[in-house]
Length: 242
Image (tube, rainbow, N blue to C red; front, side, top):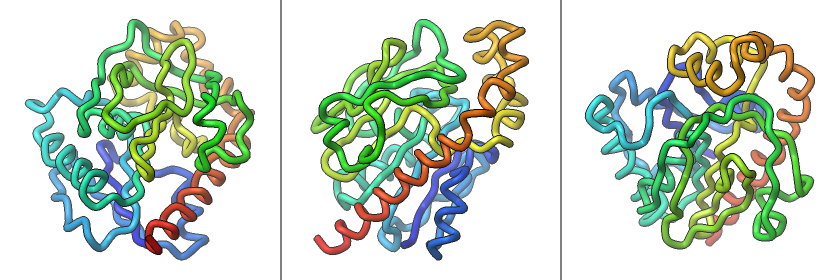
């Protein structure tokens, strides 16, 4: 499998997915858009994975690469019809690129939270093996507030009703981070925008304990990421046969 990854910050990489891909012998290529790396031809790739970042989908003036990125997502999903996974900002970009709406939340959602699968989510193969409600890791201040055409909500919670969506048959967006690894907490805390949302969401004392609070959940996060990866692998295989 050949995987194309759009990154918007060097420390927001595919996390635990990288080890799964290495174990399976998959080839993946990261494009660091925020550093000016160009988007390659899409046709040679089987899966597009779009990661998170501190910018918002509408900030095209300070981040002009968002324009060709959205166009690439539109083409990948709308024209090529190939499997897509968006995480956090990548989830929001999926919605924005295909005509949905993304807006600021009243309060950032940072740290551990529970999300609930909708009836559609409980039937979707991406979440096969997941409990109807499960613990996730969050770090975002914007949310998908309007769905694009042919989209369905697969998971949500009170803070953010569109925690996971599917657009069409093969494009998925996850607002939460299944790929999170222990090293990410300290790395993300050093990003000024993330530090500000962390303190706004949790307060100074709880923010200082974030790594300690999250530590017991990492085995569960890795298991969840492996399930998602396994289901995506099957989706890619079925798309290749179609």
